[in-house]
Amino acid sequence: MKTNRFYLLISLLLLTGCTDFLDIRTEATIPSSGLDHTKADNIYLPISAAYASLRSGDVHAFAYIGAFEITSDNADKGSTPSDNPEMRQLDEFTYTSSNSLINTLWTGNFNVVSAANNAIHEMSLFEAALPNESNKAYARQCAGEAKVIRAYAYFNLTRLFGKVPLIDTTMTSEQLAALPQATTADLYKFIEKDLQEAIAVLPASYSSEWAGRITKYTAMALKAKVHLYQNEWDSVAVLTDNIMASHQFDLMPDFRYVFSINGENCKESLFEIQSSTLGNATGETTYLEYAYVQGPRGNTPSNMQGWGFCTPSDNLIQFLTGRGDSIRAATTLLYRGTKTPEGDSIKTGCSNPVYNGKVYTPSAYNLWNFNGYGFDHNVRILRYSEVLLMYAEAWAHGATSHTASGYTGLSALNKVRVRAGLKPLEDLTFQAIWDERRAELAMEEDRFFDLVRTGQASTVLSSLGFTASKNEVFPIPAAQRQLNTHLVQNPNYN
Image (cartoon, rainbow, N blue to C red):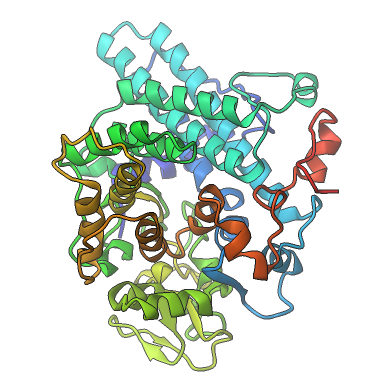
């Protein structure tokens, strides 16, 4: 079971009197912490709370899989036809600004922004109060972690809504209610600034007891992806090349291992949302229900079932089968009526014919007192294979001068293919890269926005209900426009 220091400090935060850090108020307001800033032992507590905010179900669970994956051609709603009409709206592009799942993503990600803002504020107080230079440096490093967390939340908000308010400090409720939206360009500029400042102060790695903490390479990979979305190919190439040249990361030989409990925070991982029961059957909820809401519906025993949402589509299955992608298919597709290598049965009575195999969690780990399926499963956000594929895409766009790693775009692409048991390609093409991204990152909440950013969404998703010049972004939630009348609705939404 996962019991490293990173998890234990999050658990400690939940059990002590510092719980006010987790009760972050709406948007960017900062709670009064009562922390003693002269004690270096307290430095990490606000950072731990910022990490914990990422584990909220409002950020990385039900609504997340809906907007980021079920909207794509990779996945269907799943569960049963009548279960959760609002999720069906996402699947069919019939949602409106009153859809509560969309509002959940707005409030959840802004709560992450708030927690990160609080942590950054607290780090400045620690730096001012502590006389020891090493403690000051650690506070600056922790502020860097919080800036990556804030940048990540804003990256999600920008992709989801295009234009949102930019909040980086404390504000009164009146000020928040009068705040206009920043432009997409200004949001990306802010995100890049946060990440660049974080890169300058974050370490290259941590000891194993801190596995899962954000490093400078996390910030570099996220920044590369931000540039990817803006077609800034030289920046993508420089950042990904530097990550590759560091030799800190590599592809694991076994694709399936990457998505196992033992494979969490492995050499292929650059950023994961940490989830754990800490080996307990009851107690504080330091876990996330990301895997649980996707678990096999109607399966037995009870600790081997979930809600059954976000099931692989026939389109994805045919895509993987048609290209002979058997290794990745075996991990990504979890069929009913089969038994896993670990000995768990997916019963024929399950509601859906196939489930997301990347969140499969063996029954030996599912010890929580109610179901508990997948509570120990981390959410994979950035993997080394995506770094290789971003580098390849930058090369395909002509960014060929950054070769400290010794890779070309084609060799980076082929490294991903060979691990999957596919033959190397002889030519580097956009379609080859996009297909490889789809196969490699399937069911990891990347496909919908990949289609949008590459201009393929209107063609690929039109039969599913996607409307061009509308569904590239989601509507500004009606609930938020009632709170802030300065928010302008996205085009073609009522």
